[in-house]
Image (cartoon, rainbow, N blue to C red; front, side, top):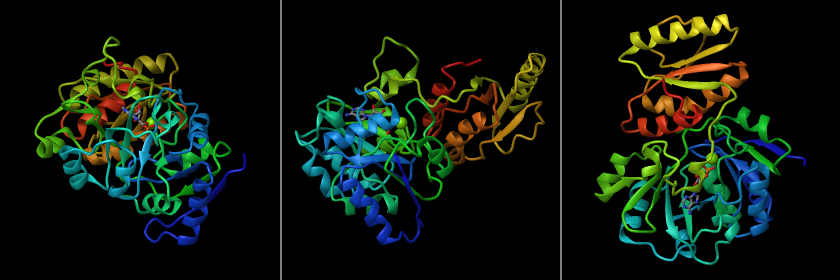
Length: 345
Ligand code: AMP
Ligand code: MG
């Protein structure tokens, strides 16, 4: 498949270019576009055949539902059965932005999009390119992350072009994504509001608006007996080729000491080692150093790029500290634990 690849200025998106890609979406084609979380692989959410193309391009299991993007809050009313008071509060406070809400779906959403569930996950992105593209396409756009299934989500143009050129009809190249981790998913379709996937809208932020919110039990530990409510969360995810280990340590010195010993072992085995740490870590490791930045927001923004970078540098084995699971740290550690296949030492 020949992929149309065009760069777009995210501050002043060219309307003509948006129209070209919007027409492709309206015509049942697949288009990758930037959002504020990660790049999305989009197609018409109301068209079964178009949605099927997303699964094919990603190599995604067919029971894993797609996330639906709308350009305006009012567009949700056509797609879902009931928008209760809690949903309205969340939409008011966090839309447009990195929060996805799971609603009971109307029949207009095909099974291909919902993965056979009677619910649908919807969000309104804040990225102006994404919003204008969806609005001009005139239909809701199903758009999961634009990675090959199981691999880290793409947050920079070069990630996508390497993996997806030839697998989709179009790629609209913008800048790097602002938040860097995928949206928070909150399920309001039954009883208590439940976070199915942690993201940049934190549990604390949700509690401030809703009062009672819980974390899906499957997120708290790796117990195969607890079924994840977001089907995608059960799959191997965010995995680089390198073996990632999360190192529990009392402080940075303790981390450096533990990692130094591991690096020496790896050197003997002729393994290429990587260490992912904060910028302020001044220790010199006998390994390739990957800078995650400093703040939690930096860590979230840089995480997938660094994971992809491990493979670019042909790293065999990589270490990362166990960051505090508070605020955005919950989302960061959720992605890291999956990338590490829960190898915590
Ligand atoms: P992705 O955008 O690739 O991260 O994929 C979307 C995520 O949303 C996956 O983890 C899906 O399992 C999840 N998801 C999509 N629709 C639903 C739904 N109706 N209920 C629960 N989770 C969903
Ligand atoms: Mg994904």
